[in-house]
Length: 153
Image (cartoon, rainbow, N blue to C red; front, top):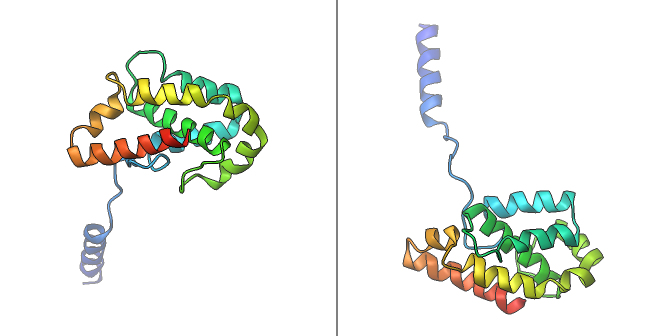
């Protein structure tokens, strides 16, 4: 009887236990997605103007821009906006010291950041824009978020 009871308890716990989500983070907010979070971790390992410039340049090549790269470009543009004294409300605190250290050099990247957003992220060859366009309401919210970033640049 004890084994049957234990088996039933195990079965009940297994069925009731929350299942891990296989979906990644996906949001219209600049730092609430997998690409941006991964980029922040990489950037903190190499927090230089060259790394930031390299990320932003990926959005200006006129080539197809995949989701992940588009999210990274947005995060990099947020760093530039923060260096101009206009961070987003959700700007990661761990980036603040990097921005203050390199603000003078990061500010110079504002034209590149605007170009990367306008031509890359919002452009015709953007997988990120394509995916957001699957739902009109989501697309409007995402575009508003990117356009607000552009205004801060």
